[in-house]
Image (cartoon, rainbow, N blue to C red):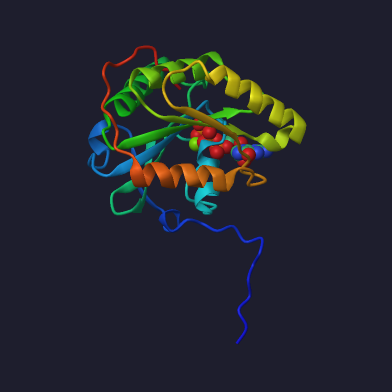
Length: 225
Ligand SMILES: Nc1nc2c(ncn2[C@@H]2O[C@H](COP(=O)(O)OP(=O)(O)OP(=O)(O)O)[C@@H](O)[C@H]2O)c(=O)[nH]1
Ligand SMILES: [Mg+2]
């Protein structure tokens, strides 16, 4: 018997191999119990959060994606194993959302990020073609205020040449250097799977070793959808 070794086959960390949809929650009382560790994906609407969850877990249809902004309208929890979860958040900055829904989401996301003790870190996605928007900066400042560790994915990096993408990575890294909470940044593309294993490593590290220090204070002005 011969054993075929697939040299280009991505190696998926065991923790990410069996993700399951858990619940789409409109209100906090639907959230799973606040035990274990979870990592949330946030960012502007349409930036590629749900796609990134699918790419990172190698499951095409796990999280619902759409060409039309505003697809994810609830907080969607995916169970990885035992008490470890990934969380897909509604995007912010989507103009066509009613003011009352915007207010609802701002409040719920603020409550989620500010009080969830199982939250081990935040993956913050920014479109590489226009990173660090006003709303992204607000989200970073807000995360700093609640001592949340952030890892930035510069998404859709396939839309730029490699040299332009690397230049943007350097510029964003410099700009993020001024923040006191732990912020790291990398290139990412769901289309080309660029940076997928780097993102997987961050997730596995957080989901395995993180114990959240609970917030000192809660910030204000978190971006709404
Ligand atoms: N070229 C390219 N397109 C991408 C990439 N990631 C996502 N997309 C596309 O961007 C669109 C939005 O992707 P989603 O994953 O639904 O974005 P989202 O951030 O979850 O959006 P909301 O749920 O509306 O906030 C879809 O058409 C995806 O196919 C990428 O890395 N490269
Ligand atoms: Mg989505």
